[in-house]
Length: 460
Ligand SMILES: Cc1cc2nc3c(=O)[nH]c(=O)nc-3n(C[C@H](O)[C@H](O)[C@H](O)COP(=O)(O)OP(=O)(O)OC[C@H]3O[C@@H](n4cnc5c(N)ncnc54)[C@H](O)[C@@H]3O)c2cc1C
Image 1: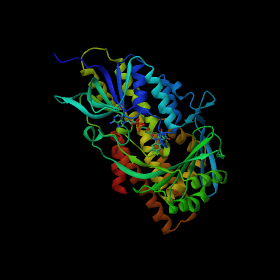
Image 2: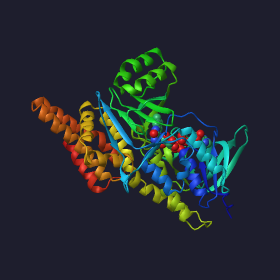
Image 3: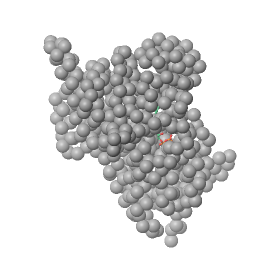
Image 4: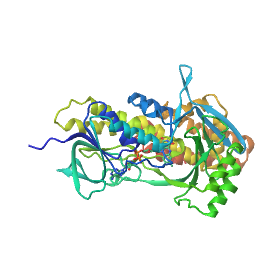
């Protein structure tokens, strides 16, 4: 007789994904263990804007209260800025009320999630570092960890182990194809008492060479993220400070500049790599991945936490629905169904993030995108419904993506109906296809979409 596992589920990491998964499963009667290597609050520049679709997912998980008492700021939409021009787009409405996202301090949010799981009787939280997954006859049976301030290794057994150890996952390599690419770096600073042009809005500055994001994260703090294309991290130096003052500051809305220059002078810079990691897990009995260990996209559109919450609802509801028996087969079936279906919720979040980042690297497409959104009506309302993760309609996203390129072509041929205009138009369409095609292929497209892209790739 094999010994009964100690827990239904053990989770590696109590960040946003692992913490919320533990709260959902533990709050619904499952016996859960969580091993987290550092329970202290972290100063982080990631996961600070939760889209309205993510707020709704937390409500569906019964965990919306985790957003309380954080001094989180309601976000009502986005302001866009380019070459001295600007406009704003509101998030979709429901029953006459604008749906809102939240700007928050990630470190505080994670601590609030942890306080909650520490209060749940079914959840055992251990501060320690997971060293390895334990495997018996091809099945992951749990993990081996060392507790903080101890050298002694201990084991946990569980019917399912869920890896939620974040972007630098130590276990991704053995559980997935491990494809990854660094698209760029974000340099982050906190602006104090910044006077935002559009209160309670995210701000996208369509700057050269690359975009900047600005949004409130508490009643007195505003986050700015400045994109640095390529795979070299920006380093603190006089040259960097000069670049920020001379190249970035003149492109920011004037209200932001005083607090921006004060932050540059203070020099508290942080930088993070922006990864593209398509979800390509192997189905191995006894184990699953959720959060950044499984799937990452460019943070330009702030979709990471919403994708994780969508996955937690997908896998978690399947696990909660299982009859609590000693059999482990239904657990493996739940993981297989989760992996087979998760793209239905996350394809739009993933494709939009890196497609929009690709558009921002192409001068003609960038201008076309700004003008298209500014033209308003459906051109603004439907894309913002997708960005906010209220709509998860992949076909709608692709229609708007190509409509932007065609809008650009129309504008180009009107102002320059010459051979140069035609050449640039062709290049714009070609770039659009090349930006989006690999992203669509990562998301299990249906036969029709796959064939359409094959034809488009053959033409361009
Ligand atoms: C620059 C940047 C900005 C972003 N902005 C946004 C945004 O505005 N909105 C949004 O929704 N998303 C954003 N994201 C993405 C978002 O931050 C992530 O999707 C989200 O934090 C993922 O959560 P996670 O739990 O998978 O990882 P994490 O939050 O990183 O948690 C991983 C946890 O695992 C623990 N751990 C690691 N290894 C071990 C081990 N061996 N043993 C035990 N514990 C371990 C770590 O200590 C950590 O607590 C951004 C990402 C970046 C890079």
